[in-house]
Figure (tube, rainbow, N blue to C red):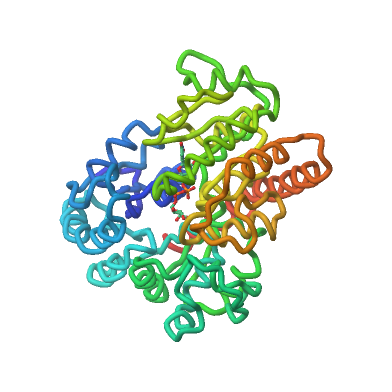
Length: 445
Ligand SMILES: O=c1ccn([C@@H]2O[C@H](COP(=O)(O)OP(=O)(O)O[C@H]3O[C@H](CO)[C@@H](O)[C@H](O)[C@H]3O)[C@@H](O)[C@H]2O)c(=O)[nH]1
């Protein structure tokens, strides 16, 4: 046993990019704040391949289990099946790994809220558990009050935007039922984890207190366990200064291309790490953006052949998103509104074009457009998820959005900077993120 280590923390992330990233960022922060903690971050062998080259503190180590769930590369094909596998196949190999772990015995297991089985594991082994919620506090609150959904107060259908409003979610303003993102085949599986949160010892919200304080305070008053809002859990500490162009030997081509573009001229487009758009809608978006004449940097996976027509852009299969968002050539962010992307856009102070697809993305897009007023919705008011948005409409919208001189654009950019300021204060020295992470570490150890 390493004599400098006094405490052991085990982290069990849900195996998906939008979940692994915030867990990893939290663990990096914790490991760098106290050298006497060893953190074991448990991933499958496949995910070790994706994450193995990450720079991280020496007291943060990977623990691996075999690939007992479907590959990350094919999980879109059957998402309910994938989710089910994470709930039924991971527990046994994780237990075997825990039996082999070097001492000291874990002081706490931090787990993704989705993985309900970890709560039972904690009880069996007499180890306290901390649930990490990787979506907004608002979505936690609305999901948490699932009795309303079960009792039929909330319509379980996102494809038709109903007019019904739900105004009895504590700490959450009145919200249309159709914005809740419920009704997916997977909703009941996710709810299982949420229902068990009160049986955990701690709840960690990957959210900025100042941006969601009403709902966070309400949750603190309602739930019987300790709750900490740990800040955005994005790798923001590396990229604070966006005025310095990124140069050097290992600079990827997309960064070199960005370095050569005029200030605020490029629209960054990323529709998320999984769940694709319909191919007809994707065709319209690609054609619309290209017809707009606006420069773009596009993260595209299988659909790169769509870009053969050319256009003023750069297409990549993957990029270092936060670094890109903080680059001075980027002037706007087209996003599917995953919670991490939402927070990264806010941290970068970028106006956003919101194109949510499922789950919490719909309420995140509302937060961006209606609450923070730092973005526009691509979809028309009242249009369902299946309504096709034509290329002409998209071209016009993108042109107006990237126009730096328009009054409406200036106002939106001003709001984005205000939200950015709130984020930066929260993650700065003595800000709410640091204070709350320190409080959690003190309490759990
Ligand atoms: O080229 C890329 C594309 C993405 N990312 C990163 O990947 C993460 C993606 O996370 P997110 O924006 O939250 O999207 P998803 O992976 O789709 O997130 C899932 O998980 C989120 C958190 O639970 C939910 O909010 C989403 O609805 C759900 O789809 C972000 O940190 C991005 O910076 C990159 O670094 N490079």
